[in-house]
Amino acid sequence: MPEGHIIHRLAADCRLRFAGRPVRASSPQGKFSDGAALLDGRLLEETDAHGKHLFLGFEDGGWVHVHLGLYGSLRFGAGPAPAPVGAVRLRLVGGTGDGGHWADLRGPNLCALITEDEKRAVHQRLGPDPLRSPAGEPAAGEPAWARISRSRSSIAALLMDQKVIAGVGNVYRAEALFRHGIDPYRAGRDLDRGEWDTLWSDLSTLMRQGVRDSRIDTVRPEHTPEAMGRPPRVDDHGGEVYVYRRAGQPCLVCGEPVRIAELAARNLFWCPGCQRR
Image (cartoon, rainbow, N blue to C red):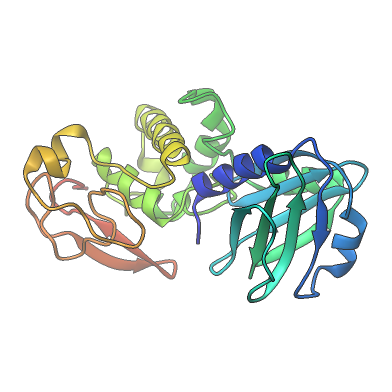
């Protein structure tokens, strides 16, 4: 499932290509035909993202609420739109002087036309998003800390709970905890405020870097392939990481084998040497 940085990047890409201009909207698959018909020819005014939720705001037409889920994708192209391929839930086409742009939304978990009040309700049930606040500002993470500091649940489980903090997925969860030497099984209430503020600030920094680069890189300069003389990581997720999908391999810092376990139906990766209880 795409993590929050990808959704914010998609919001920015939609804004760049379509905002401020009328767009043609259609649903080649047919599952969003009524919604597309209401939006066709309207001005796309703004885009928004909160955690893993994408919103496209249309003039007098409400918001398209998108959640990609595990299998959804949003792909962009320039020039004349080709014939649709696969189950395209929503196609947007915007005519501009450079030949126009198009975007195809395929296989999302959710694609619905909602009102401003319904959009507000989505925001209210989500935790704070590190990408919707000033970079590293501790006060922005206060609502998450209020829940974490009272919880007996593990910090690893809490970071994946979108009602606690929105946008963090399996990669950022594993990497942020490693970077700060926090055992993933520690109860939320056992963290101190300084640890949480540092963790929140680091997530904000890492995720902003992810928006910029469209990949997740979490290793510090001294642990890059160039600095360590090691081969670059080869993985379909891209990016240089410490523990994610490195089960059984030596930790880049202490050499202990990286461990893997299942937690809340997701794989958890950590280093027992660097993340001691």
